[in-house]
Length: 327
Image (cartoon, rainbow, N blue to C red; front, top):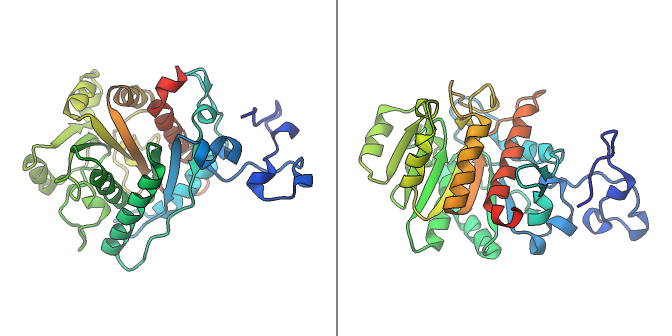
């Protein structure tokens, strides 16, 4: 894909979006159309489904948030911010998005009949998307964290061996139910722990009830945020607990609120940017990461930095998944 910006910060005339993308007549193809409203602003020539190794699935679902709301707006804000990310990745010395190819699907609009019907609908829908995607790497954008359980269970249905879930999160999400529903964002990992091992990293807001659930399951590993600052031993601990096939779920409240204030239940302390990227690159290099999600972005009006951070995070996840193609 050509450079999308001229030296003055705008797009040059040779960066016009192809007519096949914007649906205009061929004679209007040379007009200065805006970048598509897709992840990274990729056009169909570099980001169409058949040409792409990665697929973005937005799920703007929000029904059980317990304090700050707005996660239903997260996928749109992330996608909008991603259109202004520079494609060149200095870690790999190339425009990773163009090399890999990233296709953005329309958002899934789930039923409003209740949390349990919505998660059943998502599990079935995600399963069909995964079947159509084959070996493509799916990154689901939330929405609240409850959606992760449906995606993880749909992936577990597709694999004979037991999955591991790498959960980057401030909270354990192991409550059997919360505020009257077992399909709450606070119960996301409780819904999957019988089907997958869960390695939770960055925890600092956990209930006594969740500690009991964790102790009752041999496949539950908890790594506290304050373990992450003295040295990198926690990375080895997490990797040792992960099996061969891994699903990564990234709740943005894993990050310190100074980096990520735009989330419903921020907790002081938490992950920083470069240490987290160093860990994720190891995970993707040493394990088979089959899919991922990024959830709980609740955009703050007038504050775009967290949206941009979440978009850059998704880009790094995709780059790490295909790092063997980029080096």
